Image (cartoon, rainbow, N blue to C red; front, top):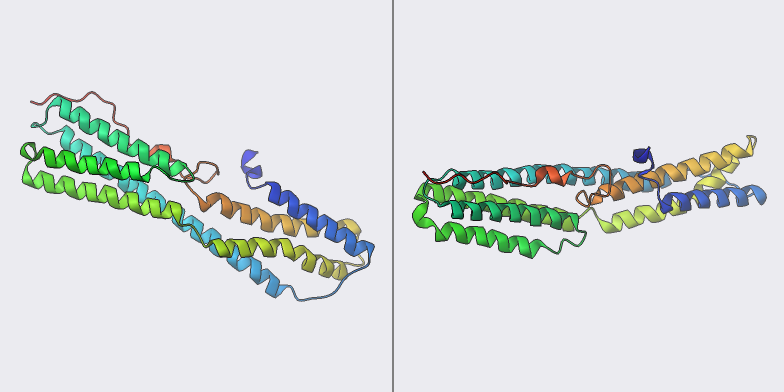
Length: 253
């Protein structure tokens, strides 16, 4: 049942109340007119469809980037975990670095302010420093491969940070919300005009239904606007993309 009520909030109740009040005043004062609603429908439906589609595209792109990030971290760790030239202590250090990097970044994505990005960048610099410090234990080709993996990690982190802080156009969403609140004052008098011979309850029902549906779509878009905050049903399951390696480190042969 929760998944059906997830898109219902105070905005849903407020638009329903507005529709009810406008319907009451139109019927009480016999106020109605006949106007073409196509232009007003386009003014709301188009930005709604556009922002919902773009929000889902951002979500799918974020999933691909998270998959790349986890794969790059895993490849980096296992490349060094299987090395015969690193000591068990150094391998434990690599394990802790990659676990910490992944955990810090995932927790930062969950935070609305995402104020841990600098800490993540510092952890990436530490990984660079580890490879540079252990050049004697890592062959030239292996070092180049590891640097390439670190670059993939950094690129994925920065792309995901960009998705986190730059959403769909704020002005377009604000415009859409304003028009949803305005629509009852335009739609309901037309409804009264066209359904004057029908039961009163039908006018109330259709007016509230139109407002509720439009606001529910807006709430849906609002939920998927930030696919990382773990507050919506369609949010990305970040725990599935967190690198966790807790197996005992094998000693060098």
